[in-house]
Image (cartoon, rainbow, N blue to C red; front, side, top):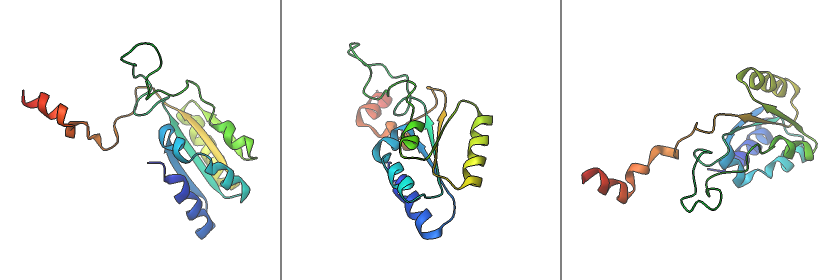
Length: 143
């Protein structure tokens, strides 16, 4: 998680071909500043962030009830503006049609582009679905 941006930069540098980096909003948080590198070298990379406002889902609730859950992110985060800040193209896509249009334009232009693809907050699951391996969960299943 979070290494896709570096791999995208490497792929663009070594091949010179357009690269599409697909990131979740959580993974993007680990290495999102690579957008500066992408713009500095004018690499033909399109970053698509599937933004559901959180880690796994954007609907988690803090059990203490006094703040946002640690797995929630700021609602309506404008990730596309990060790319714009460094001179690239930033697009927000709220529909599959907008996403397709933005992706087609990014690939044909060869410009550094970031598409902030807004998806349903309830879309998402634990990476690898390993919750069942948690000893506490296994104990509940056998009880």
